[in-house]
Each structure stands twice: as C-alpha cells, then as structure tokens.
Length: 281
Image 1: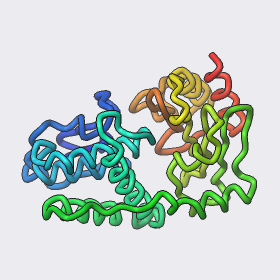
Image 2: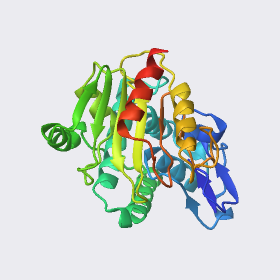
Image 3: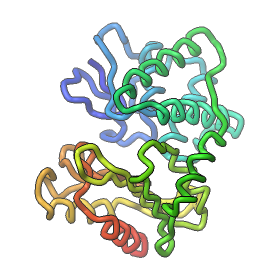
C-alpha cells in the first residue's frame, strides 16, 4: 500500500509533506510513480490535497500530468491546506482550483462518517477520469457554504475573544464548512479556534492564523505550549511535543490541531487563552 498526505500504518511507501516539509503534498511525490507496484493508495485525511496526490499517482506521477491540469491540482491543494491562492499560479487557475476544492469539500461535508472513505474513493476516480479523458474538472461555487455559516452564526456560536475568532460546532455536528468561510465572516480576527466534538470523547480543536491578513504569525510556539498542557493531563498523550507519533497536538506554521485519534482534554477557555497569549508574543 502507498500512503499519501499522511502516514498510514502498514504502508510500504509514504509520501507525506507533513513529515518532509513541502508546501503541498503533490510536491512530496517523485516525478514518476508506478501505481501498479501497490495494491492500494491510502491517506489519513480525506481532502483535496490528498485527492490531488492520489490522482497524480494513478496517472503515473506528477510528470505525467498535463501542465494546466497539474497547475489546477496544485492550486486546489494550496487552497485546501493554506486557504489562499498558490503563489505560482494566476488568478484564473486559482479560481478553477478553488472551485475543485469547494466541490471535493462539499461532497465530503455532506457524507456521513461511515461513508466518508467510499465518497473519497468515488471522488478520486471521478477526478482521475476527468484528467485521463481531458474533460473539465468539477467545480462548485463558494456560496455552497453560506447557509451553514449563517445557521451557526444565528445560533450564537461564532464569537470573538479579543482578536481570536471562536467557532463552536459541537451542537452543529452535521455542519462541515471550509475554514476560510469563518475567516471571511470575521476578517478582523488574527487567529481562530474552531471547536468540534470527537467520537472518542475529547474535543477536536483546529487553531490557525487568519491567512487573509498577510501577517507572519507563527502558530508553532502555541502548538508546543498546547502539547505540554495536554501531556500534563496524562494518557493518551505519549510525549509533551507537538510532533508526529506523540498522540498530541501537532501542525505547522499556519495551522494545527488537537490529538487526531482521541481529541483534547483541554477546555475551550484554556485553548482560546493560549492562542491569544501565543499570538501576542
């Protein structure tokens, strides 16, 4: 099995930009990949960045993609992971990439967890067939998120703590919205904490800087502090570091999150306070 955009246990080969530091996962792939050498392709996170890598592998590697198609997939991956336009591509390519990311994200958002893997597989094959045949890639307008955002805001679950945006989705479990929709709703925020439930009983947090303000705000010191606080609560955190394999917080300069497998034992107020303090350092 080949693992992309995440380290799947048992994979024979892994191409994961979270471990190797590339901007998007397509950049972590070798130019040529023989998909027949693997009995499957897997990821730890079903999203557009992973999908683009799956499609590239099925095509034989990024070098086998038409330049325009590769550019659109890169733009979509960058929108998925960084929320803003890919710096190397023009606005017209970015719009197509953004539309593809909206389409993939929208389809996954309306899928029950038990069907998410099957939906992701269907989307990968759909986009692959478009790439293989030369058909236009599927897209969706950004307004697809408007109704869900409005419902959460009307319920009073979108608040500001200083200049930190807090979105509480624990009572809106069916709502799946791209993070940039919240930043665009409160463009004055410098950072955000998005709160959701976790099936293992903890709380799922996503923390990140507002990518539209253009500030060089580094979330990594905050993620380190959160990992230390999480470890102090005991198991299942294994180490007090925000690194892979710690069953703890992790992420990169722009964004991070709570322990993936279990959620966090920290309270919302604790996390918001640490994000607020971290961004003022």
